[in-house]
Length: 98
Image 1 (cartoon, rainbow, N blue to C red):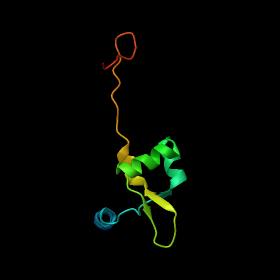
Image 2 (cartoon, rainbow, N blue to C red):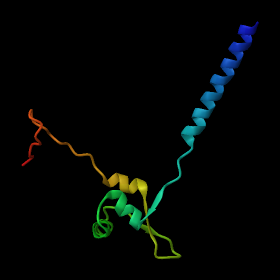
Image 3 (cartoon, rainbow, N blue to C red):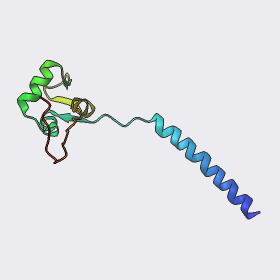
């Protein structure tokens, strides 16, 4: 009898975990915004480089209609960063790609 009761509780817990998982998959994390200064520091580049990238359309920048403050989406900054492949020879020396 106690085992049946425990089994029932386990079944309810399992059902609740599934419902929670479904709810979590439907909830999106809020977008994170950075100001201009935070953005170029995050990318570890200079102010001028970031302005150039914005002007060329490499990164989207936004500002509110109420002010001049420029904001950038963190996900847009992350999208600019690309993985690199470094090849190392048998002695551990980096090989040139030229």
